[in-house]
Length: 167
Image 1: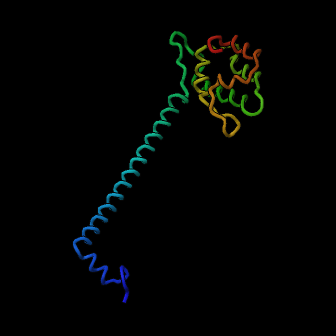
Image 2: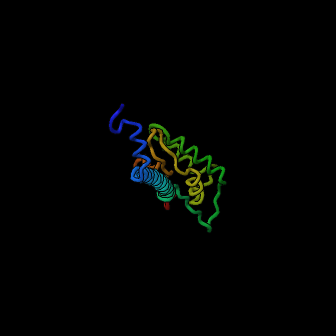
Image 3: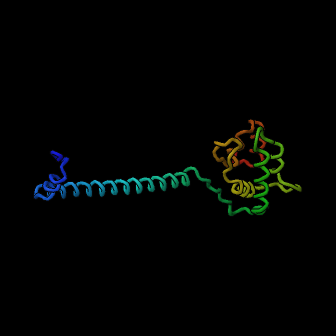
């Protein structure tokens, strides 16, 4: 016969006594309390994580997002939005990769057929350009003017002569 707590008859007798019942119910209450506390902690961590994610998304949209420039209502643009989009894509292609093709960018921004682009045309091209990432995998998106920082001082002065309000 087994002695001490290894004896099944003794365990049954202890468990059926009032003190045993009280100990068992106390243990179950503690276990239930531990489970509910764990569930509460998991819910809190999930809610905080969701709030943090929404906060990061909002911060990036507000502070790191692209802000379109408004057009001057007193002046009429000479190019359509579709042409501005094509010009923005051509500028990006001229700038993308190693080095930048300033002469091509200057030709695009100078206008065609003797029609000089105005400030609203530049705004349309800028807005269509948006933010574009560079060739390296970790490069962050830059707007068109930020891309132009690759140009030297002489080249920037030529752009400033075309569009003095933007450079």
